[in-house]
Amino acid sequence: MATPKRPGASKKKKGPTVGSGGQGRQALEGRGPTPKAEDRSWHPAGKRKAAQERLAAAKGRGGASAGGGQQGRARSPKKNGDVEVVSGRNSVLEALRAKVPATTLYIAARVEMDDRVKESLALATKKGIPVLEVMRPELDRLTGENSVNQGIAITVPAYQYAHPLDLVARAVDRGQTPLLVALDGITDPRNLGAIIRSTAAFGGHGVIVPQRRSVGVTAAAWKTSAGAAARTPVAMAANLTQTLKAMKAEGVFVLGLDGGGDIALPGLELADRPLVIVVGSEGQGLSRLVTETCDAIVSIPISAATESLNAGIAASVALYEVARRRAER
Image 1 (cartoon, rainbow, N blue to C red):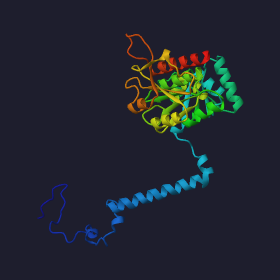
Image 2: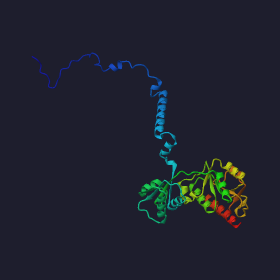
Image 3: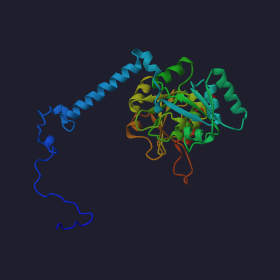
Image 4: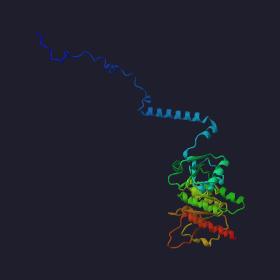
């Protein structure tokens, strides 16, 4: 009599299985010849090949987009570093009056329309400059969170610096006595803007900035100058010391401003001569090489309770004294 099976029980035959059912077939097959070093992505030769291919592809895209020649490069979009943003009602108006090549005028929505904004709109429309109305947060992002844009801004191309000796030549061609200001180690754009404004106010013919370790004409300098940067040329010197020596060879006297100078500003006798006034940084003052190049070191008499003057204020005082003496003669 057969024994009854337990419900759910199944009969399985236990024992060794024959073969793997083909599961290890690929593992047993040969992998073919060893690939070349340049075909292995992890090999240095393979990485070099991939880099060369990416470089060739980038050149191909550049050539196709350029379309060949200088005309194609002109159509390429500008980078962020190729434009500057000038904000503020006075700065924008003065820049437009001086025919600065602005590319776009931005006005905040619901901005208070005073005479400066109205004139800026009229000048932009007359010159064919696109006018865009944007929301206040977008304008703040364009000009920078710390900038007081007053609801208006323009974008201008990067500043085109003049050659230092050209500033002297322009003044001589006009029949005027050259009066220039050179900056030595000034890195604050607001000081540069203030000096540009003072130079324009007292009849100066330009400002010279070194190429290294010095501030350039940025949006902050534009704003602080209140548009004077559009009327007063700024030159860039590759080497300030050599530039000053070249100016001395042209008959220009170099005066350095320093608190320990040997000549007091009220006793200056060279005011009617061609001059370049060198202003140093507030912390370190004039550098050694520049000091040795100067024809004279001039000091501004101040109260003993005050340690020194701001670079922009010192330049303004010196420019005023030179302009006053020239007006008397």
